[in-house]
Amino acid sequence: MITGTPKPIEEILEMVEPYDKIVVAGCHGCVTVCRVGGEKEVQVLASTLRLARESSGRKIEIKEVSLERQCDPEYVELMRPYVEEYQAVLSIACGAGIQFLAEKYTTTPLLPGINTGFLGVTERQGEWAERCQGCGDCVLHLTGGICPVTRCAKSLFHGPCGGSVRGICEIDKEVKCGWQLIIDRLKSLDQMENYGKLKPYKGWNTSRDGGPRRIIREDMI
Image (tube, rainbow, N blue to C red; front, side):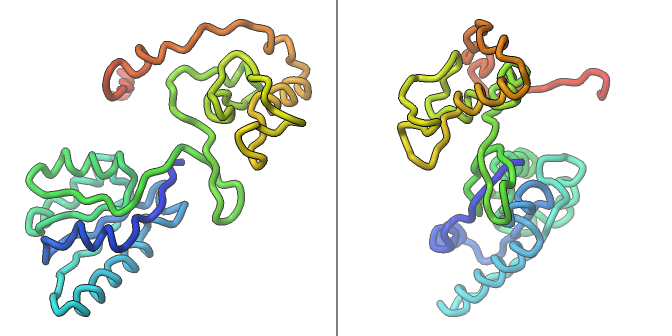
């Protein structure tokens, strides 16, 4: 899932300072799972903004909205009947959702209420860890299901750097060596032959292609 963390309320108050009538828009997707952008967070943020404005002697009108997904045109379109009546939209979806809203509502300022993090997993309640950088050229079948680009602190692609000690990365004693994890996993799967396979260097330029990547499924169009 895409993770995120709330922006400091001081930063949000500064962003909304020019406006007296805004929409606070949440998303029922990834940001709800990590509890930064769901319906509850919309309510809490809206209440905080109202109280802050009242304490300064200036009111603010806020419409609270929580879309199923802000990255899907079907749900984003539901805001059209009213969004242009407001001066700005404060979105607490991920950066992709915020940009998609901006593309659909070109005359309404879009403000980010969270800082988008990474593609990760829930390790335990309240704790998330990065697992994927979306590089577009997955090699997990050769590395035991452990990503060297993400799990190795240096994103080394053809084996460890030699700086780890007892399976711990040299950059931080709290970080396990990504390649040690891969080797241990390959041994447990009896697939160490994959460790010796030379993999082509990643074509970072072609995978990024100088701009935003696209996926097109002709069978779905």
